[in-house]
Length: 202
Length: 173
Image (cartoon, each protein chain N blue to C red):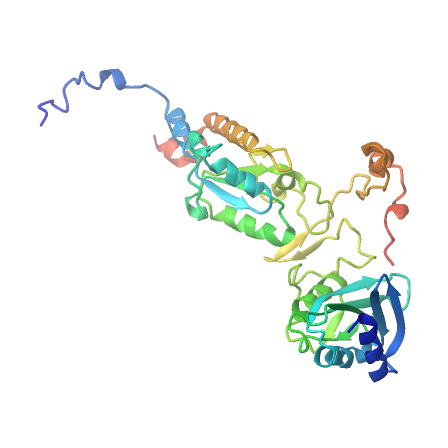
């Protein structure tokens, strides 16, 4: 079974759920409504043989609506095929259904998304932070979170301070030039106004 | 058994008597028997292990007894990136070490946060605990760690062991 076959069978079974479809260099992507993700995932696992959930990731389209997007990477050991599912998540709801009961590996992936992006998964058995500590008030992978961080304090657990960026952030430009050319920080240290370095806080 | 009287002049030990100051003697003993607390947090810990292994052999400087209990350690070698999540644990281990104690910040991350100018990384372990020796490098080579250790030994030799640390005892004398 090819990825296109799998996508066609999902489209046949859940015609109302599919909002878009995309193929790039043999990689098939299906865009779905968030409400249907559990049904589609259950069908993909039980009937199409997608027994392996490679990854769940999230994207922050800061400024767009819906703001967030969750990406599921499915793989079938039996057929050797890969399928990608995407669901939109609005900033107001900031919630998505869990798929932990379909693939247990989703547990930690969803905890990471909750920790870094702040999207809550309804029905998750143990939705705690996984990288940052309990009591940390922010979700640091959001686009409006500054790289240097924000001060916080959870007594007896951890604290955080603002990191000195010294003209940064430390970015490189793709070029075959020398280090001075590659790293704008070295050329413009202190010259660029702050707004060009960071997206301002809303 | 020997018939040498313990209170009479003993020609056997006469040539082995050394006169010195208590400070100097204590510092000499401390500096040549520094038991490290290996606070290995990242890749610097690999170099720390290499320093302890046969080729670089940290035991030449009396610091081979890596204690994994802070209560038996003299010097904490902070080897690696200290994240905010780990920071208070490092502080807690430091607080469990008995005085006198010293700290070596090994590598760029432990000294200053290194390349991690980020929300997640403490910008130098000296924000939390006093550091005696900073070692540059990413990671530093074992020679650099040994040099840092020798610098620390030199520093210990210059301390006022009794006057500073045993004030009450010093005054009763």
